[in-house]
Length: 195
Image 1 (tube, helix red, strand yellow):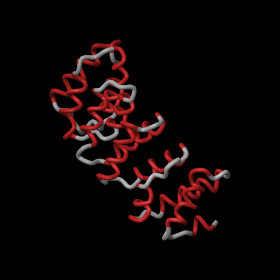
Image 2: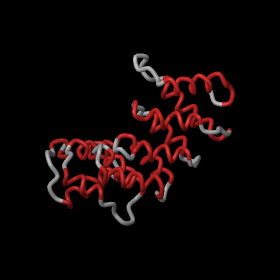
Image 3: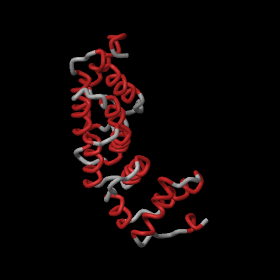
Image 4: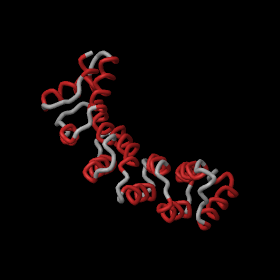
């Protein structure tokens, strides 16, 4: 009950105690309450503490730290942490969590970063395509068209499918630019290769 009544976390030792319960607490209900408390009490102070990863941090704690950091939204430092984790994370699960949450960071560097990751055709291209699909905006059409028009191989078809699915979920009232529309039509007619 103390967690639910907290209104602020003023000291690093209190933050570490709550974060420890949020990531490693043995009782699921208390763990969820601690996570909820950290999410509810957003502050610059907590953000600063979240940005400092601990040496020897458990995988569960590192995963939670990334998710909490991403909940702070648009911040170039957060983008930097998430993008570094995508490229050099020690665990695939951390890399995927960073990718999943990167689309919410919405800096001007997010879409180019995701496009570059997609076109690298790495094992994370599909996850990057899904993250990009969450953030489709008019200013991204040229990049999307470039990816859809790139030479396809069998291992790249899932990426194309993810982007097509995101495009097809867009509201009808938002027309596609003609070059993107032609490329989508061509891919959908191609049938077995991508769709």
